[in-house]
Image (cartoon, rainbow, N blue to C red; front, side, top):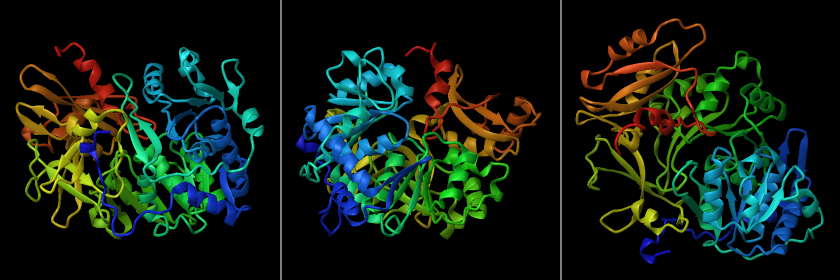
Length: 525
């Protein structure tokens, strides 16, 4: 990477000396009979987990994978996925988890871009790569099926030596490579190194991950949302419970049956869980901390979670790339549920205008931040990395978030919108999130999105898209009239449509690009 792009995150006074893998090794030695992984009826002890991950590492080394090489996984959450994740790291390689939401075209671009030396594929996602994977210069392993184009993972790993290869790791070595889940264009790989992941472990003890935690993982392991709960639990020597596919009532059944103590959920999951008809019949008293991230959790949902779901509720605002992180301990600040909290320790978050100047207190600006957890850069793309950086007067590197926000008088961060989702109508900036909150305040609306659509008079104009509760009878015109009565004249919806559902990614983000596409496809570019 260009030395001008050296990021140098602020790590505080204590140097990082222990990698995640070093701690995982010592945890296995300290309590080999303790449970490390649970997935349905499968249970794996720390001792067995240690041996299996050693075998995975030796398998990779035996087929020519070298330190720093990228090794890809395409699978739902499973015991083999967890074993592969840690085994790849023990081999000194870089975990490259692929999104099952990506198109075949995008997956091919990702595998070519990262130069993966091997890929491990689960049967349910094999059709996504069947048209090209055999033509790529990489080793192919099937996780749970037999096929002539693949070596069978289970057979291969059982034949391997279970002695730890003990590959030396440096903090600057690659840890994981996470690709954006877009379906077109050039892939954008976010590279995290061992230093970044080690810096995240500072919160392991304060959050109780090292106190016999039982963490329920129900979002995909290809997402950073999941990794920031998966890795701390293993670093803490505790137990990870994996859900291959999220289902709200099934989630509650696992929490009750397994006495789950920790969980990471995204906002759409919280809403579905709290809407389970017999939610209050479940014994959830074991829960200590519930985390939320990936998108803003609505204030009314936070309030409902605090009222009915035991344990603390902590919301993180941050990016897969890292940079500035803010934290809201919701139960300690019930009057700040409309915010995403204050900057985390050793994190600095600032707000800038389009010219890169900091905005005055209380005004909206683009969020930029720096902190101990920052990516090493976009893989092989110094140009994209350079575009992502803002520097203060001292030359320190901050990452541009693309999000807009403001600080209230108490220093709590209030999100406004994604910069790219802001609607510019007649020269006025309209934050879609402001309109969405008004729509969601309607008792008949269960989900809502606002997008900009072409307008001959205004350039673009806001369109509301809503999903109604079962039994609602009001029409689009009545819903729009109610909403517009609460909005300023320049911010009113020009139209409203009722939808059966709104498209979301697997971690719950509304896919606004997909919603906008039909309205803009005939517009000149």
